[in-house]
Length: 215
Image 1 (spheres, one colour):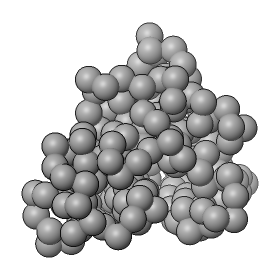
Image 2: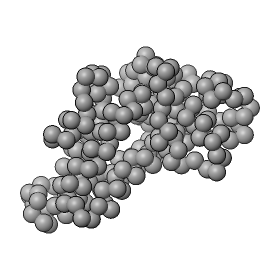
Image 3: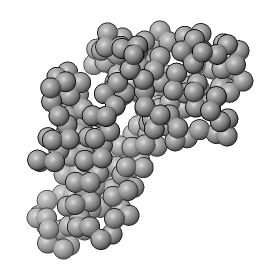
Image 4: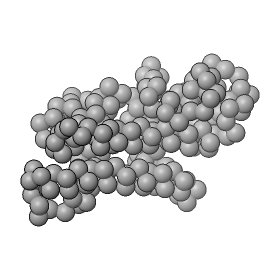
């Protein structure tokens, strides 16, 4: 599965599509525009080439800077990849946390809002999906990338807990069936979201937001 994911990334590249700023701006230090520009370029190159084939030279070229400038901000290609991964995870967590702040909404509405926001992000940034595939692939590929895998496990676990907590609140208010296991239902919702992302990548005619809003 990991190998097929990387193949999808390398074959699905589109040099005209840019990875959205929101994916790479969340966890940036005070390096300013140069740092964020390098991270955007790195996200794009990792999406197009995959981690193994990506080079610091290619990232510098995409950012239109000298290779040495990259090393003023990041020590290695591996550090760049971790930063891109961390920024993506921060974005997922931000979306999950938004749901808990809407106290005036019903539990069902808060869950629906989280689903809508994630699916809208995938629709607005289809060029981001090869990067997500690469992150999935690398996180499952070897012990070398255990840090990426651990970050993903943490992010998925946290998002499932957020959804499960909303389900429990809905059970307490009578919105949801009290006989179901919130954790299992939350896991199924997250799996459905991942499946929707993948289908939309394979079949561009699918509209993830419409699918989510009608579910």
